Image 1 (cartoon, rainbow, N blue to C red):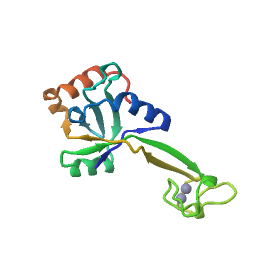
Image 2: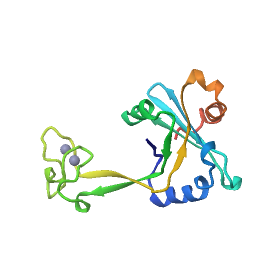
Image 3: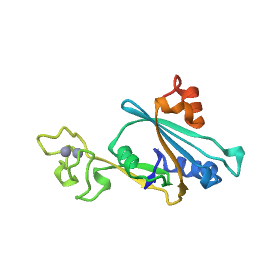
Image 4: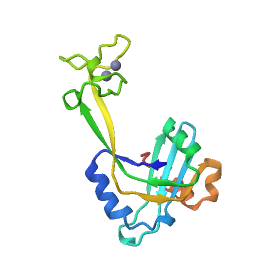
Amino acid sequence: MNVVPLFTERREALDLWNVTVRPWVDHTIRIRFVESGEKYWFIMAAESSNPDTNRSFYKVLSRSENQQRFRDGHEGEAYLRFGAYSKKYYADVKGDAICNCKHEKEDHAEEDHGCLYESCSCEKFESFQVNLLKKKKTVTDILFLDEGGVKDDPLAWNCLNANRYGRTG
Ligand SMILES: [Zn+2]
Ligand SMILES: [Zn+2]
């Protein structure tokens, strides 16, 4: 399975990968998911062959089906890849492209691009697509923790202590 941290800009994702993640030593990559109510912390760090450019990552995210599926299915190993969002509008896509409202482009009005389904509140066709960068790393140190278990894991413990009262993502 893939772990895919998402970035809004492809350029940003590529730069970060090339500068920071590429020198990471695969078997030292650690990923932690710390579940806390409806949220979870995604924490990632590794040893680098180029310590000058090394850094760790964390983000506080909402629990999701994807995260749940990964939790149930990863079996201790995953590919780390970066992804970048691209937003597509009415004029950018073919008729069978799916809007964020789950209806096809063809179900949206030509004039204002609003969805034609009466039950749908979508006012403008918009589609998020995620493009995966090709480069990947293999991660074999993946843990799911609840907040009570954080004490036993230095990476998660340090991250939560340093950031819990700071910015949230
Ligand atoms: Zn729509
Ligand atoms: Zn719709």
